[in-house]
Image (cartoon, rainbow, N blue to C red; front, side):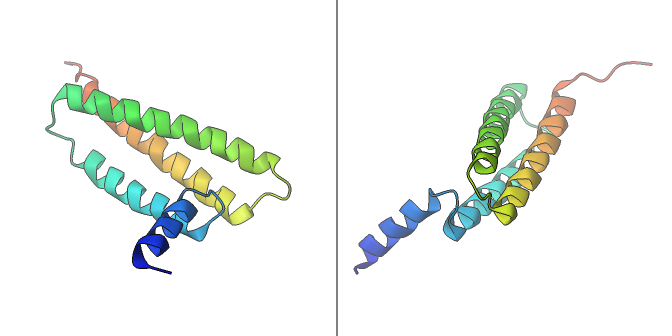
Length: 107
């Protein structure tokens, strides 16, 4: 198996929800997204809105993935826990960005 074929095979596995490669790819994306969001304190509101939209889409996709995983007998409990944990982390980031976009109220 050549390097290109091996890489292509790993990429295909990374797209398969029950694959350990998928979990690693998801974790890597999540870490990058987390750092991007946490560095948003002084960013332009348009950038924050774009990030908020992306996070909401990913949160909705996770909701659908969790539903599919629960419906598939027998559900992969470890993957289910990871997805739910990731979904909660996304919700926290969404709340953080929404707080950044909400103007402070004067007392």
